[in-house]
Image (tube, rainbow, N blue to C red; front, side):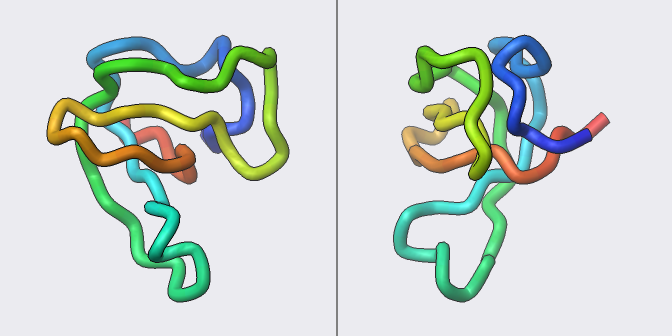
Length: 64
């Protein structure tokens, strides 16, 4: 499942995000969603979230 729909993202969910500085390289950072920062119902590049670690980025993969 990709992270482009806000309804698929919930607090406490394990996800992989791409940080702003990693957008060119595509490096993913794994963590647990703390806050959902995107207000629109969907976003083509992924919903922006803040992880419990404090990292902010766009969801690329929802980890089951």
